[in-house]
Image (cartoon, rainbow, N blue to C red; front, side, top):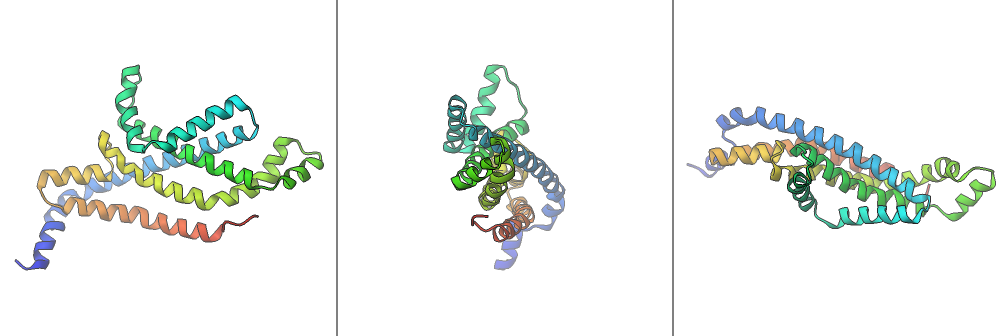
Length: 227
């Protein structure tokens, strides 16, 4: 057997491609659903926490900072395992997909809160003072003057963090979520051939290459400069 034939037999056997490609497609759908839910929830919660933090209520801000620091400090895999095996002991039973969504949403919320908060702080004090001098309330100044500038500054960092958290959906394999890595690695262990993992790699490329290209475009469109 030639080297090319051996490579194809190990990594791309057509009979195994035909056998498992549909399973991998279904796992892509699961990955996309989890990723979309995590992005929506994580960014929304992070933005809300940054807004609440801007009002300067010290006890509330301490809670927000602790939440953010803990979720940014601990590896997502550790948080997933703690939630999946720890919550049932507290009488909270959640499915594996729900645990993955909840943990990754908290991680993204923690990072996005800090990014939104940094964007708000980056706006010069004179902008606030000018807005308030026209008779705007604090909230009106925040909504109409500060946030439009701050949000533009946060786009590149939020894009990068979102891409990272989407890739972390592969951590769901440790708790049995039928995402791409779980399905392809399980199939590989059954057949003793790398072809299912090759299908998984192709699935990841199909998902993430367009996302990376979009992220690159957004970074170019919204440069890290003051509005």
